[in-house]
Amino acid sequence: MKNIKIIRIIDLFASFVGLVFLSPIFIIIMLICYFETGRFFYLQERLGSRQKRFILVKFPTMKADTPSVATHLVDPSSITKFGRILRKTKLDELPQLWNVLKGDMSLVGPRPCLPNQEELIKERAERGVFEFQPGITGLAQINNIDMSDPKLLAEIDEKMMKSLSLGKYFSYIILTALGKGLGDRVRDI
Image (cartoon, rainbow, N blue to C red):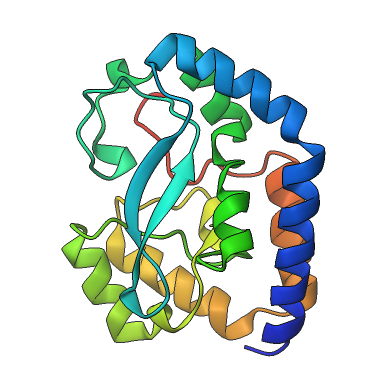
């Protein structure tokens, strides 16, 4: 992948600016989440570049007793009322700007998987996907490909990372902001 240093600079700038300017929205969402779930944020261990574990930060969209499994395996009744809105608008992903700022993630890359998603981990390892930073969005997300098909997801992730350019990087971000794709989703949402 070309332009990795430029992309990191853009990630740093965009995540910092996003966190600063979106902070009023963050506060409102945090308060609503707290009253609905008892938590400001949802923290979950994920695998990043070179399979290094890190803590992913999101706004909570599910009840506190929901098991930590891939989203497509979650019972739809686990989603809270406000959580449904956050998921449909993708606002639940905004706290991951912190992960981008810290260097755990990029704005664009393969979605970070859970350490227990063995089939996906195997498929990604075989294709060299773990050589890249995971991202908030990417080719799979804008094309409605989720973690329910590990082989297809790993193939799409590999394709995206091998062909990622600055133009594609920005197009994935713009398409996501415009509402294209559903990415990782709970059944029936």
